[in-house]
Length: 81
Length: 460
Figure 1: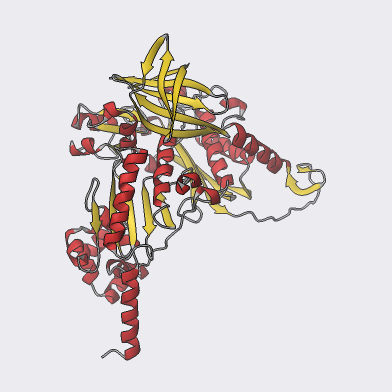
Figure 2 (figure 1 turned 90 degrees about the vertical axis):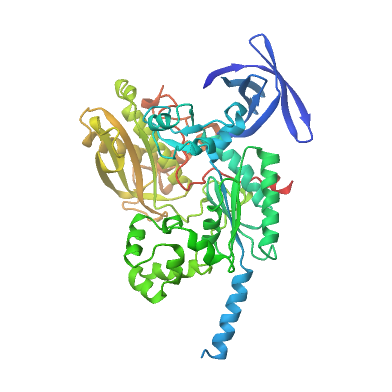
């Protein structure tokens, strides 16, 4: 169902009153507009905290991972239905 | 005729009991709902969350839609697929569930100061003194439920039970699922108990039910009305507690869970004082045998158990290794295979002693058959004794620091490295290249370790 991708991506963020959310990301030369942020959760690897955004566009679901230590984004997984 | 003192005591007791107010909140189909929250394409479909995506893998959580099709928690993937062919399966993601629980629990910490994190998806609230009556408490909990849906995820649902005791509040939350709210008070207590079977009560299983049936008790109302003296004769002191619980009197301990600011490393965040044992297990796939990964998997399980033991600040006096071989697969793992318990000369919690003992024990019971199941359990846990051993000078001790062994100092350094860089930043050489799929992170039954409530969220 979910496919592992684990590739770096470029992300445009919106900083709102309710928190920071990805608005659009570029992966493999294509732009994906985020329609909805469904869930935000955190994980830790030692002291390194990572934010995981579960987002969807019109057709797919993605898991985007933001590393707070390196300030880098990664497309971790995607699900196509 | 009762004396005036007795009447006064009875009257006072009744008023006190009326003032007591507890709530139990149970997240419905929790793991599956979190997955459906994360991926809207899974919503409205039968979904099973499994520990392993293998036909023999167990469904540890089924979505509400899957339950409506007849799928039950604990079924294998193969059986669930037969019952519900359109069902989708997904592997569990413990970190995600812990993170969502933290956010949900933080909302409950705003309702009352006494919150017990009973499990990853259940919470008890002591509302005594905060709300005047059940209606006011129900209003507050409905608001909390709306906040869960607006701030955490709209797909998350919970059942709420409100009652004058912990036991009755848990019973109440089971009445209406999903997304229900049930109040039990002295007025409707008998009516509620009459409709519930004995096994609906938390703490009554098949064996106690059979014993009660022999006494002519078939419903919880029968149990409530049974003479307490006879109940004590039949069940011992437990009979008295059941009598009190079913009369709405609070006899269960409320274990207050602290928010994150009070939770340091090594603080116990479960509602239990100290676990009786700490263990990890793993169903070993065939490919792990083919790649000679049995020992690395055992080391990973042992390291994880040891790390948890040290986080509690405790030592183990003994270790049990259980392994199933060859044809044992598919049968119940807790009554097959070989089990060996080893006792340590001195209580231990350092990885060197634990891993050495685990590997030695496995080599004693394993004769190169195919391993299908591995489990390690640290038992007989005790706090540090601080007992010095003779002789006072030992080559294993650090010079100038009597009583501090090299093992202890190295363990402390290893734990510091892992705290800073992650659990597998420093590992045994034999574990190099071991995939994270083998013996991954799991959420144990009634475990809430790692679920911390953020103070910033509370202060919002």
